[in-house]
Picture 1: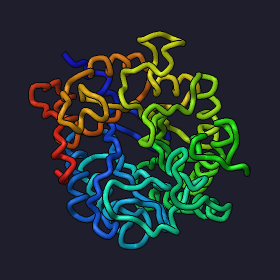
Picture 2 (picture 1 turned 60 degrees about the vertical axis):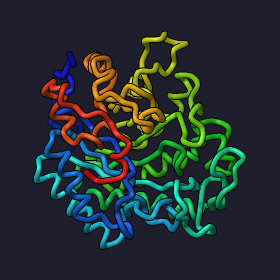
Picture 3 (picture 1 turned 135 degrees about the horizontal axis):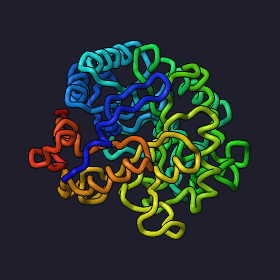
Picture 4 (picture 1 turned 45 degrees about the vertical axis):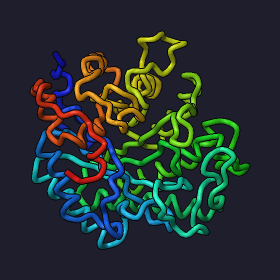
Amino acid sequence: MILTNALSQPFSLKTLSLKNRIVMAPMTRNFAPEGIPGEANATYYRRRAEADVGLILSEGTVIDRPASRNMPGIPFFHGEAALAGWKQVIDGVHAAGGRMGPQIWHVGSVKGPGDWEPEASLIESPSGLEAPGKPRGHAMTEEDIADTIAAFARAAADAKRLGFDTFELHGAHGYLIDQFFWSGTNLRTDRYGGASIRERSRFAVEVVKAARQAVGPDFPIILRLSQWKQQEYTARLAETPDAMTDWLLPLVEAGVDILHCSQRRFWEPEFPEVDGADGLNFAGWAKKLTGAATISVGSVGLSSDFLGSFQGEGSATQGLDDLVRRLERQEFDLVAVGRALLSDPQWATKTLRADTAALKDFSPAAMMELV
């Protein structure tokens, strides 16, 4: 039987108050024509709010930089029309009793899955690399970096102005902020590069500081992070707890309130050589090392790993008992659910009621429509 008591507990941090510990993870949907979210997008999010998701994090929404997205249907989080669309989204979520934050994003030099491309001369990254040894786009100048930091801050301010409850900076999965973290894609010799993860975190720290200044001291900031990259699943930024402290603690000190710790499988220990096969996962270690609140995510509600689920594998109940036991031990504070919520908008309601027989398994077909 799935233990649901811990999932159903409220959570509060600064101005953010959630009715339970379930978070809808950000998932790229590519259903915003011309970058503008419409009624279909608003209905999609409202449906999850109506079905007891404690906090909804939107799909990645891009900042005001010329090549910040790599698919044509990724929504903007800038410009009058797009922000009006997001206002419709958050008003609908609030009317349904939900809480929500946009995920604010820049894809860096990562190519999208289709044929659509931004203008090649506009593609930017720390060192003009998509992956180690793979050139794409140009290395950002210090002026580019300053303008990008300012664009993140404007998006943060707009999130607060529109009435969102929080926002998340996307610093994971090999996109722009993560490309600065990663030694394989950050070869810079100026103050935004360096041999250590602490040095390469300067760009992210400056983004967080600018965002914090834009929203004030009480508005919660979430930062999504990962060791793995879509360019290299086995990549690791921090091989030891000390290295993870060097990476994460400056970000928390800069103003991050919640670390959203993405791993491909939430049940895998982050440092098994330190505390064994049943040790803390990424979110558990991040909380232990920084004292910040953390979100755990990674194949929640799926029996398979990140790749297998897209091949049709994935039980809606697999592993939930283990996840909730970890939550009860306060290894982390919140649990993000991704693909399971695509196929089953009612996943949170059913899980909180322990109605596991009614849960729908993930289907890759759910990626092709907003339901």
